[in-house]
Image (cartoon, rainbow over all chains, first blue to last red; front, side):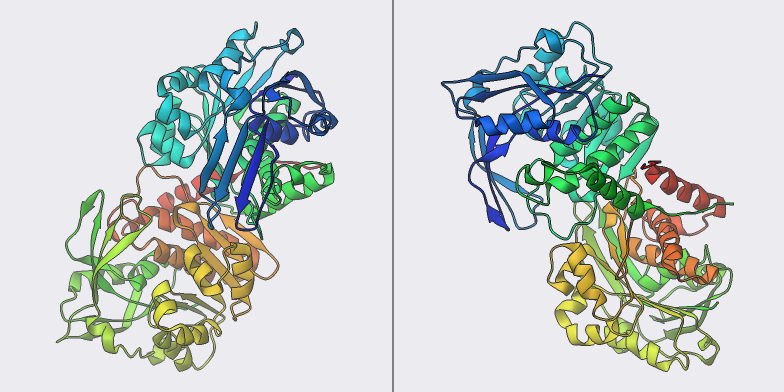
Length: 308
Length: 308
């Protein structure tokens, strides 16, 4: 089952109460691909764009995680997308210090012919029109399209965004975005309104408070692991999405029951990501570490009640 | 197994985005006793104080839930404790509009002789010195003492509070209180610090985000049920505590495994409470309704991952 990942590959500069980085490798598609690589044995097809300043070593790092970069445009005389942010003391909120679109400003994604066999499509956070442009280039509709987006597009391109939401299967947003998109405070009501916009499934990410999966009839809640330290939340949502779709693509099962499992695997990947700056923790994990982390999630919520 | 509940029996006036009440029956011990009554078949021994203005009908309501009010002092020429609060739009925060201590100002709890056979003691939120005065009146130490408290005592009587915390088995506080009491932002670190203050177990209540149970080696997370509407959060924490200790007292099992079950039953009771104003929903539930609600919790978090 081939997985196509579309999203940013970027430089980030991050400040948290625990420290500060120079320009480090980031971007939604980077986190998604790395997290997915722990589950999907096949190559992960990446579509993105970087500038001539993007280091060869980072491309090698992606290849080492069996990411296919045939669809990664490298614009030699331009600069890579750059984002800089500073987290507040509670680590739940952040200010954007700088955004330099650079190559992203005129990004026209091109789906290489070798990527056409796409069963699972993960659209990382990007301009909604760009996300839809990828879908329209695919000759056959993928079995499952997962869309991540953010409040910025709700503020600035709600029409485009709604058109894109209408044609995907799974939407992942956070709780305040679910409230903004639906105009409902109750997440149960918000979910039902959003599911009427097109997607069959909605995942509401609540950060340190876990995640909810809704379809029209069912709801599932996955906790976040209580951690000693959250070092850097950047990329947590993307790592979650990567683990989620990587697990689905490998198991080829898109039932609600299997999505529940996929959310636990995604949550495990997110819990690793936040323990170090950037992608540092996500590189070079062992499958044993991943399994042990998933076991912690199982132990965390396991209880045994026999109702008469 | 006899259960002794100590705490306020009060009048509340509540305003939420959904409406406003006149003086209605409230108080920590009221919610605790009512919630516990759905699990414990024996009488629940109540210690509290009210004024001459407290209605006979409310006393009958408590008796109908097999609450023993022999330890409820009625000071005929005084007024019942009154609290008035207004919830903000997010329902997670509230302002206290008025607090009239009245009978609570000089409350000297007296443990009737018939209450001496006490295996489970639930100390609802009250002045820490008053809570400890109850413990010291018991000839035999209960098998399990559960203490609820709040940030107000951390601000105004931290010495007294720490003395009380040191002699109980289970402490229940919310996440911001756990951070305040420990000086740690990470709840994992906060829990370990607080467990060094005396209690063997710590329950951190996170409202709509569920609850965590810690001992020195283990952690358990119980979700809150995603609800269509939260009508009035007043008493949710007390209903949680009541379901928790009621279930433990009935099953006579204070293992970590059974505490996990007790937390789910407590969470179920809290989920009922918030669906109507005051104790309205907590009166006259059927056991079938409670079981169905617990089943919703089971379904909400159930997943099946077989790690190799």
